[in-house]
Image 1 (cartoon, rainbow, N blue to C red):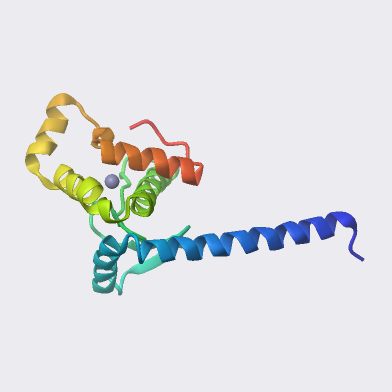
Image 2: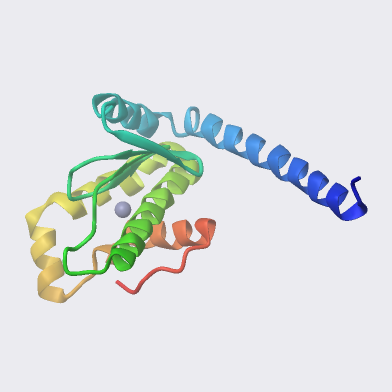
Length: 169
Ligand SMILES: [Zn+2]
């Protein structure tokens, strides 16, 4: 026999599913129209890495690969292992979760910026990550990788959307 509390829980469940599914569909639709360029690039990388392990994180497809870095490209996230041998499993798990949330921040940036994502986020981010000069600059000035506006914003927006409390970096 169902009482009023069961009925409320049941109705809340239906409401939650009813709201969550359209929001996810809307996100995917938005990625494949407004943000189509970065999603085509992400899809191509996804297809190349099809044999890897994949999972779903919120409105993104996560590919787990063996590279020591991660990247977000539209609704596709490519996630490396960011743990350290001398850290505890819990700490490494937290570091990896923070990285995943950061990359999800790029997914949200893609939803917000659409066609501007490539010039405003992807290109500066790629240069900041790959050019040795910027690596030396970060070391010399003691700057965090997340100092650059597009990386700092990805942390802020990812943490906000995912309700994540980031470890100081
Ligand atoms: Zn980033």
